[in-house]
Image (tube, rainbow, N blue to C red; front, side, top):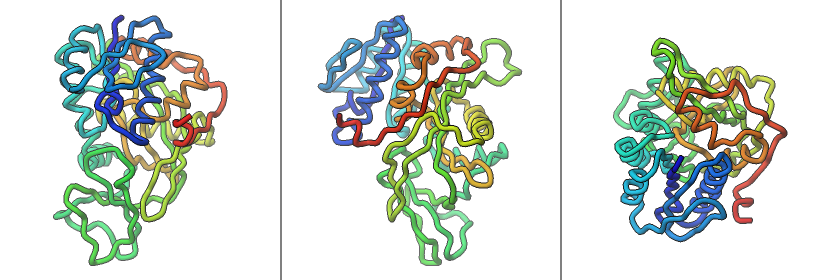
Length: 315
């Protein structure tokens, strides 16, 4: 197949750590789809990778439109608040190997996403926005983060008081004390029966390296860990992905306390794929293609744990 992989930071000319993460993820995806026998093109504002065919662009959205129309399938990786529109462009032109645009938009809205999961009986922290009834008590630790978006740089930890205000465009969620983890999944299309849930394949459970001060920062993590409660974590992640209509690769952020508490659902490849590519025998690209055809295996072969930091991306 001819496949377009469009990663926003590389294609749109972002800089700093965002570009380093984006380039590393794009490199993993391009190498994996290529190793699985596919021809890969990707838009770029300058960086060129060892595998695939680079297409120089000055307009990322237009390149996504033009390249996806020339390919048999496409996958876009972008900030959640932009990903819905970009995915819709792909859906109009070719086979979308990522989450459907409607699912992306649900995941991107942190308030709406939390409400949907809560209605499904999934453990989520109490969440509210400015103008809604208060759900916190003085002294509660709360997390303030953008209602739309995925960057941890704007996520802060605070102690709630009667004087606390929630900024416009932000949500406040109760801080859950526990182990910061994520689940990496590939969710298949249901080609057999509309009455059955889609097949969901667990790749890895990952421990996140989170620094918590006034701000909350993601600094990397360990991929492929065994917490002793991996099945419980997988079930929470699987139910969350199904409730939101996710397909393809999905990353679910979870805090493990008395129960798994679902914090975020990421409807796209996440930084964890950098580590997964080091320890999984199967090709991630081929699994994503098989997810579209409803032909996923029942399990994957993970050989070890793999630890990485953001600093490693500069090497």
